[in-house]
Length: 350
Image 1: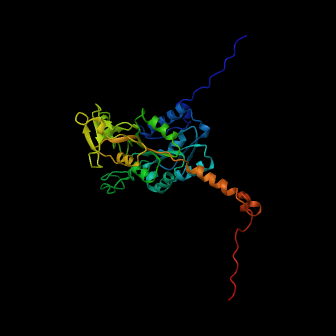
Image 2: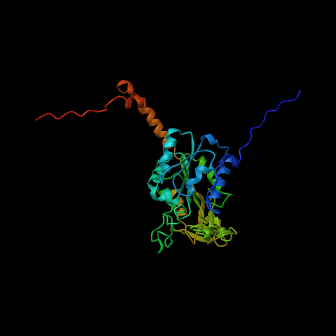
Image 3: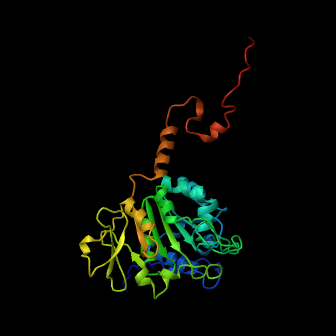
């Protein structure tokens, strides 16, 4: 008689989260790397596809739900945050991911994104930023830099660009992070942090558009320049960067403007130390531009006591339990079928 042993459940792989749809982005697009990283992250987390929902608006990034073997909604331009809020309110236990772009999320969808962030709905928002409208053939987007030449700005853009991370912080976001499409080592860890955060976790992903804005981030993403131009954040650790990790950031005495210092001249104890819970420091880091390094990682993470949808559901439950006249107490169908809910009496003649 042979012994029967219990079979261990098979672990999921990234392929288990890939749909059977042909991925239709331009060859070399940074979206491929992001898709791979998300699928890998979900596999490592053993996420249940039946409890996972991807919601997008319009744009190249918004093809994302088609390529995920989960539930998904490809919605309308800029309105993914509103649809996602409804999904989360209908079923707070779902793992909801919003995928948007700099045009979809910060132009027509800017108002919806603002309210998603301030409400702090419990979901993950991935904002692909390539500083251009890719799907509609390369017009300048809200994040395009001054001077960007495009079909809509042939003489160069004159508009001050929007900073996605500063926008999120200003709207009251409780989790704000930034990463790069090609950073397959660090991106999954940031995505895991975002998923574990109770509230809206906004991750800006700097993504290269190989057709309409190729190389826009090369100044700090190229292999040669990255060590000297990227500042990788770690909570509780000093702000150090450089190929030899020989540079740092500090605030000079009596000043709120950071400066770059050499660790050969300044002791490490004088450097700024990253604190994810400090909104002022988060804004400072989000604002860094050359000659300063670009801050990457979790800029801000300060969970609130309770998420918005839980407060909403508690309010609904409390309201439906109140005493109300007639048979319509807590019954929407009965209310809709109850006839007129008010009447207008004719005015009395004087």
